[in-house]
Image (cartoon, rainbow, N blue to C red; front, side):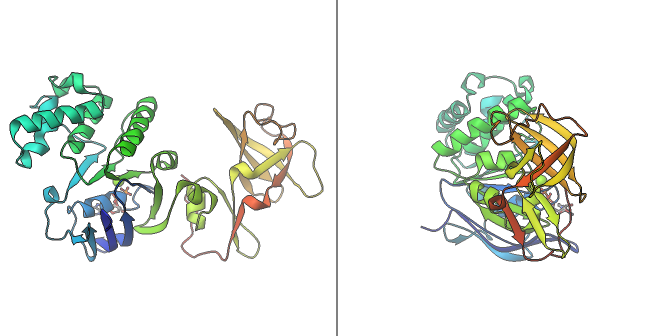
Length: 342
Ligand code: ADP
Ligand code: MG
């Protein structure tokens, strides 16, 4: 079966600037693809291009084998939701959710029934008669999601949908979105700059940087095998250069800190420590002046050989052991590499 969405060599320019540079992607029905990347990477431009809101300088966008170029946004079978999804202030909640259905020429009774069903999907069925000005930020985003879902789009596109909400609300809505995506026969394209969110929600994750697709893979493949120093660094790996200019990436949870220095270990000094619920994140500086980020699981005292995050003090001297199985060498230092920490 043809993919619900196929993006082939799509390029979008703003003047001289290549906001999207020959992007490719393919999305199956039922699949969720998370588009991940730093701010300015072209994520929103990709969604806007697919929606028909940005002209293509090159490339082709198809849905189920049909070229979308002749179709305006509202005829592309899309549900759209943005971070600042503004609801129509003069309609009540149900009126907002019915909007897309009425636009599609759906009869009033049918629109009401389907809008109510969409509100039920997002747990907002009791709010149908409310004025949208009485809603909290989280409730408003739920209504916006119901509005996007009500016409039963083949493809739902979400651009940092809960980015403006506080963390607990965002986690709660992400959790519900994930269960919704699994239940609905809808393909989902979700934009985020947060890799934890991308890993939690995406069946696959696509990393976009300066308009170019760096890598598309399942969350586990991406985490185990980042294809470039940029992807590794963006995901929080340690990216280091050796004397020959070769680049190595070391996963932060593959480094062990010890109190006693063994012969194969380098000495380092603890320079920072942060408590992160299930692990401590420890920053050390080695005698060869490399900065390494180390994750020490809170419950796993075995791996830390007597050193746990709590017991480590800033300025303390430790031995560093790296699991060679969790380190990647990249063939050479690509000229495009820069050390964008996020
Ligand atoms: P992201 O969503 O990943 O943060 P965007 O797709 O919004 O990135 O932007 C990609 C690049 O294109 C950025 O450099 C941005 O400044 C530029 N850009 C986006 N929209 C426009 C526009 N309408 N006019 C000019 N430049 C734009
Ligand atoms: Mg954006």
